[in-house]
Every structure is written in structure tokens, then in C-alpha cells.
Amino acid sequence: MTPQNLEDSKRPYELGKRLEQMDQSRAAILRAAREQLESRGYTQLTMSTLAAESGVTRQTVHNLFGTKAAVLEALFDLIALDGGMEKMREAMTQPTAQAMLERFVEVFCHFWASNRLLLRRIHGIGAIDPEFGAVIEARNQRRLGAATRVVSRIGGPGDVAHKAAALTALTSFEFFDALAQNSVDEPAATAVVLDLARKVLSNPLQETNLPPHPSKSGK
Amino acid sequence: MTPQNLEDSKRPYELGKRLEQMDQSRAAILRAAREQLESRGYTQLTMSTLAAESGVTRQTVHNLFGTKAAVLEALFDLIALDGGMEKMREAMTQPTAQAMLERFVEVFCHFWASNRLLLRRIHGIGAIDPEFGAVIEARNQRRLGAATRVVSRIGGPGDVAHKAAALTALTSFEFFDALAQNSVDEPAATAVVLDLARKVLSNPLQETNLPPHPSKSGK
DNA sequence: ATTTAGTTTTACATATTGTCAAATTAAAAA
DNA sequence: TTTTTAATTTGACAATATGTAAAACTAAAT
Image 1 (cartoon, each protein chain N blue to C red):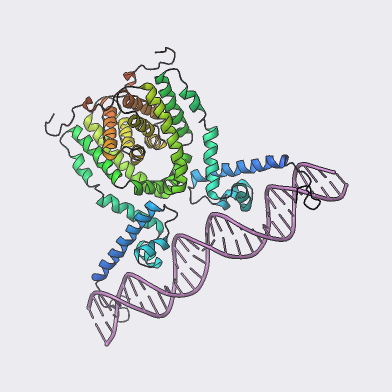
Image 2 (image 1 turned 90 degrees about the vertical axis):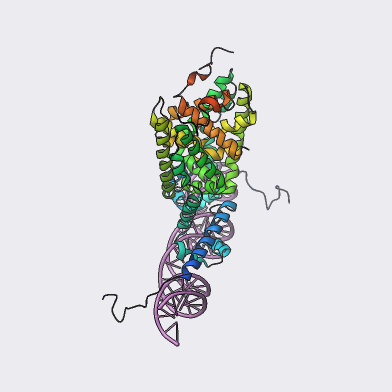
């Protein structure tokens, strides 16, 4: 019953050029997935429309990816790869703590801005589907880890975990998206995030920045 | 052809007690919708499971609400109503600007905290479905309007629209949810939001809070 | 020329939404 | 109490969408 049996033996076969074509199909499908996800939304994107726009059969989409969820996960992985997430390493190795924070904020804000509509959909899927949500949350936890290192590096008073949570929230896609929703362009939004991040990390919680609770004493 | 025709005339009929039962069914369906949306997510919530758990027929769910989207919109309206959104009026009529800001932040943070998981799902639906997204965005625009009034009331330097956008993002559900995700409880998260809001509204953009760009000069 | 393996075609099973009409039932009106 | 009304149920149906399976087809490798 070994593979060398006369009956079962198969001539060796390298996919070669066929692999390229498969990769092209995969790429075309992911491109179509991105377009349709952005323009039509999640429920309107179907395996059929995906196949039609990418020039293959619906069955081929299933062969190459398996399920609709797998297509979206592949798309998610793709933008994270060529979207510049490898710049994180460069950010985390800055010489000074402030430069580290600055690059940290810039890297994420630029990534959010570059894929805003798509990420809104993908994160939305994570919000409505617990299973997919775990994938998103895993990435958020990695950002939390990086944020914790930034906070530790900067030092200062206050609880590290608490400040890291705040920094993570400030650098979340959702916060950036909310900022950009109201006519704040990428540089301006990035500046706001960076400004707030510095304020969070410099002082613990300065509630005395302005009159604390002026509820009784009118101005 | 008037209603008084012998053929077409109908005996007057008040629904009375039947209306109560319809309301109970409606309430039971919305309760089931909330539970299933939170526990199973959007796609796992079906008209069938909804009907089963609320003790009516699938057809009745359709009779009472129309479509699945309509059920969720009704649920969205419900939590907004009895969820305490009427407290907004009280917040906007505070005597001092600072009290107004404080109540503004507190009202929203408390609302987000009281319906966190449910709102994550509902906002997620808005993110994946452009049509439903418009409903969410309409509410965000109302918050932006209120934020603009708060910002104007507080005054100070800087662009009102810009600061209002920042305040709106800080008081967004998504930002609160991101904060609360990492072990920050409601009071702490509210304090963070309020603190950041004060900082945003007090100074325009104080980039000189810390050494500006210490990229070349080491510490 | 033969073999291999991806693609297509075709068919099928399942699940879900949404609609429709007749039978049923509980409440209102007489 | 009897009749009438309207909501609920029951049963059926159409339309989509996902996912699987197998045979025919085809392009590439041998």
C-alpha cells in the first residue's frame, strides 16, 4: 500500500505555471471582494457576484478559498500585509520614547486611513459575528501589547495598564474612523490622536485642568 | 361605494384586549431579539429562532414587524427610548458650560455601558450594511450637533467644528467600547473620556506639551 | 502522446427570507 | 348567547444563498 505501488504510482507533477494562474484568480477574487464589500456591503457581496466579477466560476471560488468567511479573512490578511503593518517594527525601535509614540500613532492612523471603508466593513463583521470578532480582537490585543511597551518606555506616573488601554482606544480604527467621519482629514486626525495620546501619557488624570465641578457656583 | 353601503358595512370593532396581547408579543420578540443578537450574533439570529423563543409563529413576527431589518430597527429605537436618551435635554440645559460638558459625557458613556454588547452588534450592522448605516449615522449627526453646542458654549481658541468633531469621536460608542474592552470599567472609562474631552476643548492643539519632535536630539 | 490536476458544468441538499391564502381562534359587538 | 371581526396559525410556495459532490473539460507538465 505504499505510494510506490504499481497501481497507485503517479507521475510527478509540478504545478508551475498553473500556480501562477491560481494566484491570479485568487488575486482577482480578493480584488472583487474588496470592491464589492466597499460598495455594496457584506450581505450584498455573494459568492456568485464575486465569481462573476473576477472571471471564474462560483465553484472555483469555493475551491480556492472554501467559504465566504475565508475569503474575507484572506482579504483581511492581505491588507494587513501589504498595508504597511511591518512598519510597526520600525516604530517600536525608535531611539526615543516620544519618537516611538509618534511613529506608533502615525503607523496606525495611516493604515486606518488607507483602508477606511474596507476596515469599517471588516470590523463590522467582527462586531456582528462572535467568531470573526475573535480574529479582530486578537489584533487589538497585539496593538495593546505594543501600546503597553510604548507606555512603559515613556514612564511617568499612573497605572501602565490603564494608560495602555487608553492609548489602544485612541489608536483604534473606530476612533480614527469616527474622527474622519466629520470632515477631519488624515493629517488632522492623526494630529488629534497624537495630541490626545501625549496628554494621556504625560499626566495621570488631571481633573484640575479646569474648574473641577462648577455645578453650584456659577461663573 | 360609501362605508355605509349595505354590502360593505362592517360592525365597529375595537381591538381592546387584543392590542395588549399584540404589544406583549412585540415585546417578547424584541426581548428575544436582544438576547439572541447578544449571544449568537446577527447571522445566527433568524426569524425562526426569534419566533420560537418568543412563543409565536414565524409568520406572526412578519406580521408584527415586516422584515428582519425592521425588528432590529424597532429594537434600536426601544433602547434609545427607555435607555435614557431623554436625559440629553437635562444635560444640554446645565447652568455652566463645564457642567454641560460633564453631563454630556456622562449621559452617553452611561448609555453605551448599559447596552454595550447590543450596541456593538447594532453598530456593526450599520458598518456592514450601507442602508442601516444611514440610520446610525443620523444619530451620530445629532450627537455632533449637541457636541457643537457644547463646544460653542465653552468657547476658547481653536476651530469649533474641529473641536466638535473630536468631542463627537471621544463620546462615540466605538471609543467607549474600545476603552471598556481592556478592563476599564464604566466609571474609569467615563473619567478618561471626560478628561480627554476637557483637554481637547481647553487648548487648541498643544503639541509643545512635551518635547515636540525629539527624533534627532537624544534625551 | 499521456498523465495530472485545476476549472467548469451540472446537480443537489440545506437554510433563510419573504409572501400568500385558507383555517383557526379569541375577543368585540349585537 | 350568537354573530362578527381581525389577529394568529397552518401550510405552501418562490426566490436566494451557501456549501458539497461528481463527471466532463482543459491546460499544463511529463
